[in-house]
Length: 225
Image (tube, rainbow, N blue to C red; front, side):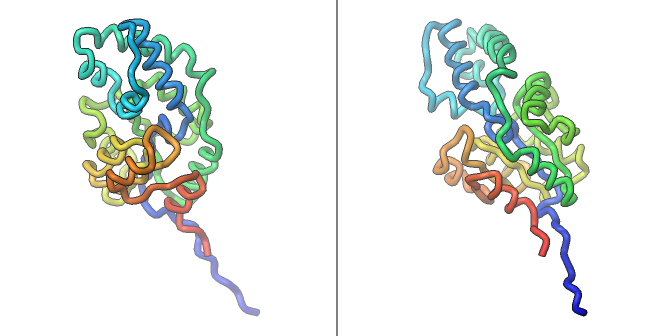
C-alpha cells in the first residue's frame, strides 16, 4: 500500500510583524472622522481627506507638530479624547484576522504588532480584532523615540521576538509602513484595504501587495502538500 508523505505548513518568514490601524482593524474612516472633528473643534477648519490619509501610520503628535506647531498639544489632546471615547463603538476587526494569526502561529511563525498608536488604543484595537490573547509582543508609540517611517519600532519587535529582520516581514496598509519595513531590512507586504490606494503602495515598491486576507495568508504561509 502506497503512503503519501505530507509536508506540514511552514511560514515564509520566521517573523511576521503587523501594523494595526487599517491592517488588522477597520479604523481608517473613524480616524479620518476624528481628525476632522479635531480640526473643527480646535481650529474651525477641515482638511482634505487625502491629506489625512497620508498621515495615517505616523506619530499623531509629530503630525500635529509638523502641521500646526503652535496648536499641536491642544489638537493632540482633543484627538485622543474624541477617539478613545468612541473607539469600542466605531471600530471592528477585519473578518478573518483571528484565523490568519492562528494559522501563522500553528505554522511556526512568531507574530507581533508594531503600531503608532498609544498603548491604551493598541490594547483596545487588539481586543476588537479578537487577537489580544494571541499576540504578546506589541510595540506602540510609547516604546520608541523614533517612529515610522524610521525602522525603530519594527526592529524592536524583531528583537523581542528573537528573529532576524532579514527573515521577517512587515504587513501594513500605508506607504509609511512600506518605508519603515525597507529601512528595517525586512520584507514588506502592503494590504489594499486601508489608508493607501493600490497605486500608492505599488509606487513604494514593496515585496508584495495583496487584496484580501486570503491572499495575505497565501503569501505568509507555505501550504501543506
